[in-house]
Each structure stands twice: as C-alpha cells, then as structure tokens.
Image 1 (cartoon, rainbow, N blue to C red):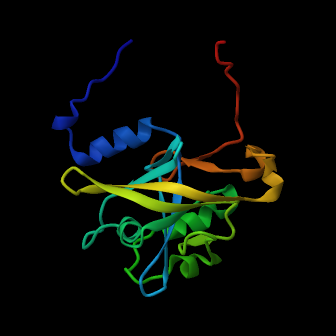
Image 2 (cartoon, rainbow, N blue to C red):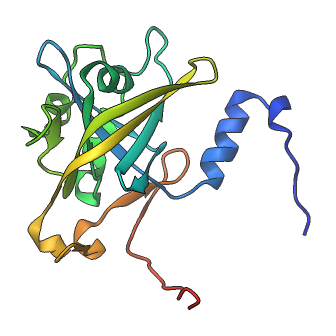
Length: 201
C-alpha cells in the first residue's frame, strides 16, 4: 500500500492540524459551560474532548489560546473548579457553531446564541437546557501541553442529565439523542449510520 510519510517535527503547525483533525474522526464535541466570577456565563465547543474513565467517571477537553489570552473555558474551569459538558445534537448544531466564534472575555455566549442557561444541581456552572444531555463536572486537574501552548482540563463527572425519552433504563437511545460529531473544517457527521461488530468471546 502506497502511503505518504510525514515527520511532524518537520511539518508546519497548520499542516499538522489538518492531518490530525482530518484523520481522527469523527470527534465527539464537548460543549463546555462555565461561569465567571462576575456571574456571567461562558459557552464554547471543543472537539478535542472525550470520556477517559468510568471509575472515577472522567472527561477531558483541551484548548489553545486566543490572540490575547488563553481560551476562556479552560481558564474558568481551572479557576472555578467546575464546568458542564452539553451534548450537541443536530437540533442545536447551528447554535453550537455560533458559540465557537471569538467573543470578548465578558460576552455571554448563551445569550448571543439564544440558548437557555440552567444552573447545575451539584455545580454552579451553566448547562444548555436545549441540549439532550448534560454532564456536571468538577475540575480535578489542568495540565499544560507544549509549554502552555495548549492546556488539558480533566474533570470528574458528578451528575448526568438525559432527556427521559432517550433512555431505556441507563441505556442511551442514540436515535433519540441525535448527537453529531466533528469531522474537519466545517464538516460534521450524524450518528444515524450505525453498524455492529461483535466482539470475540
């Protein structure tokens, strides 16, 4: 099989980004809600996001920086010690895209995108009411990557909210959640096209 080889230490940052985000797909989207000390809300999507443990229940997300400051979500998750993850469904995809814009440090992306903020039950961070599911999280660690170029936020999930008709006991009905995934550039994918692969005994 003929393949093109890249030594990433000799590859420009833009090209590394295109290669990695083009190959590691689809990526789940962590729509991160945080609260500022002033009481205003912050909301932004991160496709560098995943669940990494269920004991303890742990999620991670990472972000770089704006031209003048680190990403607000990363900073606030570290300062306040809490955040929410809001699952992005097809019905809120456009609102999610709005919140990905570059806004000022005091701008309320909930209001800008026309979303309803609901305070968590166990944390004070805001959740997206229109999202089909929400995770309340407490920050357990913030790790600098590459000398601080990016920071990885580790959080323990302390509560979960799922719309009632998307559950069969604790089994999630994906057809009712309608989550989307991030591809590359402006491309996204749905979770409708599903097939099964049976694990060996």
